[in-house]
Amino acid sequence: MIITTSMLKEHYSSYANPMDKIKRDAQSGILFRINRGLYETDNTVDPYCLASSILSPSYLSFDFALSYYGLIPEKVVSITSASLNVRKNKTYVNAFGRYEFSDIPASVFSEGLTYSENGSYVVKIATKEKAICDSLYKWRVVNSIKGLKELLFIDKRIDEAEFAECDFDLMCRLAGLYHRTNLILLNKLIRKEYTDGQRN
Image (cartoon, rainbow, N blue to C red):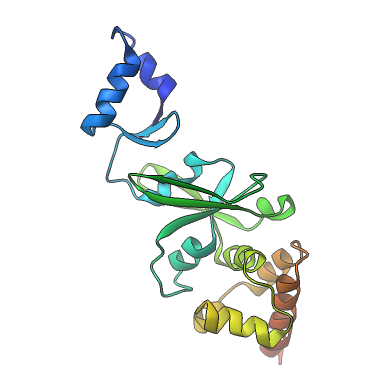
């Protein structure tokens, strides 16, 4: 369970110095600090469940979400999230892992999201379509459909079969909101090799 310093101070109000008690509990492994003023009481919780509590507003995306959906083969080292109005990338490291946050445009922040339930935790995460769009917003810029395919399927090793199972109506709608070259090319790729091909 996630608990704040204020909640702990109230819980330990009978102690002469509640903050000293909190520090002792953290040192002895009763509490696990996840960020300033924030603790977790269960050290077995899946680390990704804590990401949005470390920095809000945010949701899981980028490499973490791509791995979560089986779009890339690698097991990710960092838990990556999309953030809003942070302005520069932020990284937090605690006992549960490494957490990275990168901004995306406000116009797309609330679009294409879903929820993952893990015990008592309900975690906001990008759909696989949104995770691809978010990633293309951050990855190096390419200037052709051929370059985009190389970026997606060779450089970043996205599984083509899994990509083909995406909701392309959703992906195209999302891609149009970013106003970035990679996302414009994604729309063109989908129309050329996926959507049109399915209609023929």
